Length: 202
Image 1 (cartoon, rainbow, N blue to C red):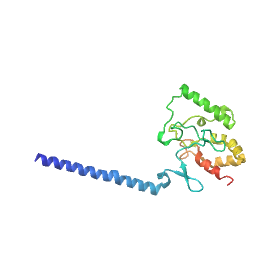
Image 2: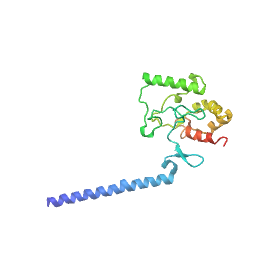
Image 3: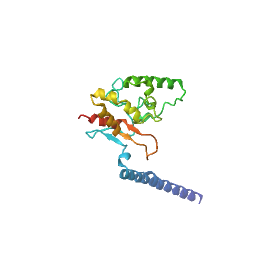
Image 4: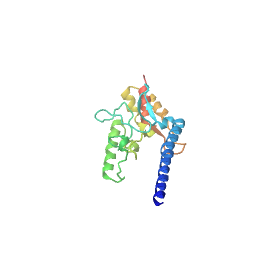
């Protein structure tokens, strides 16, 4: 009698496990995936960004570097903020620097970046925006401030032989307002801006 009760209890537990595995592990996943594909297909597929030929070149949610083989920034492209994720914008190593605001290594890195950005964009060091020299918490932020984007206009225009007013207008057309009108700050998605820039003159 005791053995029968034990077997029955185990069989009930196994059936419950199988049922909840099907309902929560398979059914729930399929329902959520279907809702995502129907309601927000672009976001559900990773917010991929395509070029004019339809090729996937990145995600609107993950930044990427615009550098040469040596890792130096290319003057003909708008540059993103620094990244502490792996070798830069590595989605598999998402993180910040984890250094406190008074850490001497962080302070030295910021001062070094400020000097490099100022020289690259030919502006005074005091005019370099904060996001041009600091990493985001994730290290993957694809956005920069409008101030940093506009600071780069003269350099990009000169490198491409374009009119500054046209490049400035391109930046302004890619300004993304605060979420819901009041959350966060206005931003510019660097990848999307550079893709639009690549089409200028084509």
